[in-house]
Length: 113
Image (tube, rainbow, N blue to C red; front, side, top):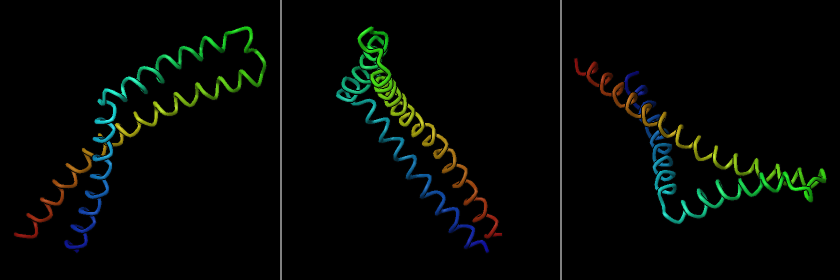
């Protein structure tokens, strides 16, 4: 029984560690100078502002044009949320790794008694 529990905990640690590693990749990516310039500054900020202004433009009031603008705005929000979600999941996974490692150690210590 203890061996099965340890194996399951170790599997959980591996899965959670994959998410932690992905979170580290997101952090490296978002700290990259080119990413900051192209995505964070140009896409998340300037393109979002441009779309807001475009949405208010008298020449862009046709329903199809408005829908296209909203679609582009939604894409910016979705991508931003995707990155934030990965970061949050990585934080939760980091805590799960720590908790699972502690549990594994407790189970192993009990088995030695």
